[in-house]
Image (cartoon, rainbow, N blue to C red; front, side, top):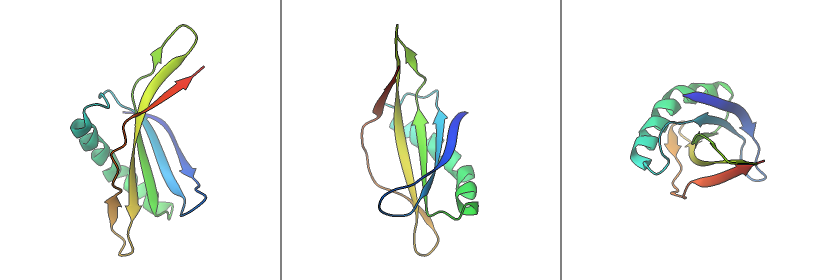
Length: 104
C-alpha cells in the first residue's frame, strides 16, 4: 500500500474527519476485494482517528494514474466511517461509482 496523504477534512455541516488517501493495486470495479482491503486498512487507521479525537474518517482508494501526453487521470473511491453515540464505528452507506480525477 502506498500512502498518498493523510489530512483533516472540514465540512460546512457536521464534524471534521481524518482522511487517508492511498494507492491500490486493485481495480475499483472489484468492489468486494477493494472493500476487504479498506477494512484491513481501517482496522489500523481507526486508532489514528481515535487519537485525533474525531468522529469521522474517510479511506480513499485511488487507482494508479494513467498518463497521457499532456495530462494524467485516475479513479478514486471513498469509504466513510462514522463514530456512533455509543462510541462504536460504522461504515456509512453509499454505493457511488468510482470518481474519475484528472490533472494537468
